[in-house]
Length: 190
Image (cartoon, rainbow, N blue to C red; front, side):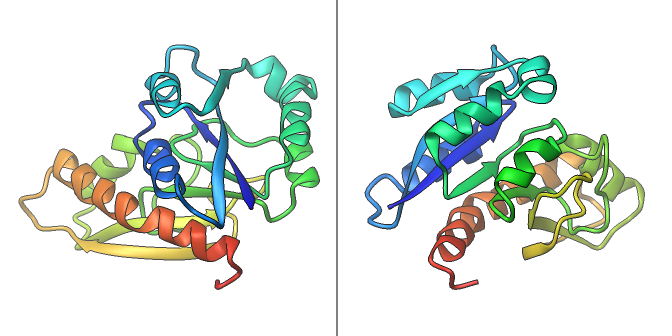
């Protein structure tokens, strides 16, 4: 049974979707959710879903081995960033090479990098009159949004779309594709 640990910073809809997708799976289960935000709604979702969850601060994440020690104790087969906004430390990436993935709300390499998350991305897509956007699931490396691409899904952007409309389209793509891609990755089908 593959063990999944999720990192999230906000409401946790992707985290909840992943937990539910793997709830009765013979292949994997979400064993823990970690957040850098002690007030994140993802903590309530984890409690309701009966998944172990905890928050940590920047010192525990980047200056000490506290979070690394938690991960080593959990022995995850895959670490998933689902709306997690902090840059992932090299110390963790070295211990878990090619085992940390992220979902990004744009078609990388466009609209990636520091500060490019959530509505910032969608507003940039509108401002630049893009005709399509989408999601990118990629490996995490020491640079924001520069790890190898695993999967992309696209959607059209019309001239009447607002950043909010685009956010809804992206959310649908994430809900549909993210769990399936994670499963294929764990089964070594991609």
